[in-house]
Length: 217
Image (cartoon, rainbow, N blue to C red; front, side, top):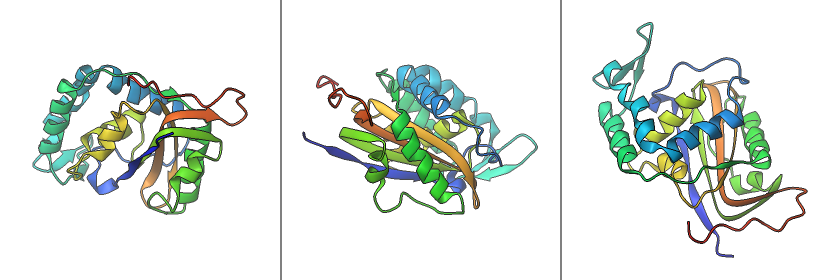
């Protein structure tokens, strides 16, 4: 099988458009994160409205939260406008299937980083493979300092400070059919969210052969 490995990308707190992080790492579920990504994948033009609503809260490069808390961004509304254009031109695509095994691997990563760690680690594909077998392609996004599924997904779609918008590309990669996610506390940034993607994935213990990627996608 020809396997294409997608790049890995981080969304850093300083580039965040999200609210202050929750101190409780149990506030965001894997199902909620995958459901939120599917809202964007299946109807990107409608999802653009959430980002359009944020424009009024900008003052220069600062995003002003309720209570007048300021979040400094690198690009200001330019990054929002880029995301809005992308979403209005993007074609709807198939939803991601939630993977329990990939979510367990993502949870392992969040637990490893709880003390303040940062980054993907030495071999993320080994984490994805702990609870099943991936095929065709895989990728990983990590976000810090967000406290709702929508905050996380919006920040990754905007991808402030990342000219190639590669977090966004992972979310809208039509070769990805499965996703797992986890969310937990983080000593430096308040929270960490890891999302893993794969073109095909067989959960450990399944008797069926590895699920093949639809060649037409």
